Image (cartoon, rainbow over all chains, first blue to last red; front, side, top):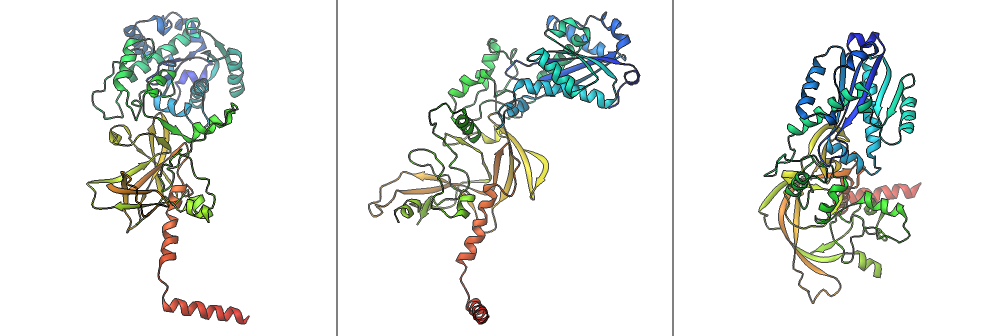
Length: 295
Length: 163
């Protein structure tokens, strides 16, 4: 995609904001909006208030008008819940702040790659504003970054970005197609916040003892924890290593997967992987062990 | 000697009479699931082809309990079949006091096994594909030695002795 012609000639301002950072389900969306510096005064008259203070229909309307406005450019980055869960539950975990920072930086990079002459970027903070500003400046020297709390209510260009993000997330949820083919799934998800009775009911309706939830849910969220307490226990090697590294003094039993390789034999006491002592190296390396001698 | 006895495994009998279910492929997950029994796998576990190929294996992607898994499918070699065994109630066999005796019955069969790694791309160096080396080794070890092979061996030995 190429940038609009004006964006490659005139220094531009960009606002970046996010929608759906907190909810336990659905995508997190980062949106940006940009315009020429000379257009900024006009932009301020367009009533792009903070998206949270607007009704859904107003946001939809504003988004449509913003799309039709040839003096404005915009982009989104939709991070699906699968990706959020997977990153936060990786062997080396990526936290939500880092995911957010990377998404915002991805939008800046995308605009630069398209040829947008970015002069200033306004962005709602995630974590400490000053640290975030330094991180952004180091990554993109030559751009002036303004990182602030509640940037969406301070800068019209961020309010616009907030509408882009929020409308994109709402639409993604409205037309959500489940990967799962289980029966009786629905989309009355509520806000996705744990205090919302609709969200609680949705989680209750969609929990599964083995699979947990459909992949619409962010499995790494604390909101899910009580549900997993009642589900079938699942143990991962990466978690156990972490417990070990935590070094809380007590020698935590290291439950390893005995079922790797061809042997799925559950030991009487614990599911502990055999040390391989006494076994030939060939078998050790392949995690092979003799379980039972069949007659 | 005692250790040998301990590592030699326990004795069991297995009933491989035709199973009712042909699963075609089974999934081997990198986690312990503390549950035995049926699960709605095809409704919730949805592998997708990534288009990537490593060591001749097509890499698939799937999610379980929020974790991203990458998997590869291995077809069992010709002449081998996979079985899902169910342990029958262990009756203590008085004649085999040395170890636990248990009996198994085949509940399902499969020809392909998809093994899944958490976070790492499958490769031929993973333990599971390497397990199949055993079949080659076992074949070589158990293949009867022909008279011709014996003759060749002894003539080779004679040659090396002369030098």
